[in-house]
Length: 280
Image (cartoon, rainbow, N blue to C red):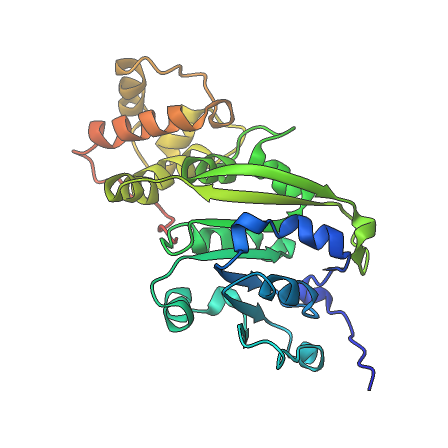
């Protein structure tokens, strides 16, 4: 019996079916005899390719109507969860299927979940690296190629080495999307717990504040976001010889790390509050 699938726009379903392109995502050293987590099973073409090399494959699919295409009875190393991966307790899932062993994540991500999923796995120690196919525009924002720095690019570059693998033309997808894609590999830096905690808290908060209003200078964003008297913030800039004209988009990761560390030491006598709680 031939099954037909009605593509659902709400899930951002644009399937990549070219075997050679799929293999370009699937680099041998990343998956051979390793545990792999796939985001978006689709019709299972990529899943089966992974399973031929990997130790175990755990794949997440949100669309139950794809079940007729996903008979993996010939594979004893594929496990599928029909659910929204953003709503899952990934630590619990990974421990259930892989114990404490590391996993490698891969997937073709819809635009609307890309940043949310990346943030969800950034501090999971069990996931040291991941490779995602995403919209080209999003990928270039992360890389800061042709773009000014953003909160997203600075934060991701503080935690991972980002490698551009390949551009994918929109004609290689079905249904054909309006934009091209890009494959990025993220390799997490080896950081001690103290530095991870700093990046997850103070660095995150300071960087978020710095990009609070894109066209504002850093000094104004910091003052407004934390509700600090501007004259006090000016003294901080003056003490550490930070230009009062600088904008966040002009700063690199090293500068953000240095200034955020100095900032939270300088203002430790104040009750620094933010309207946005840290959610990672």
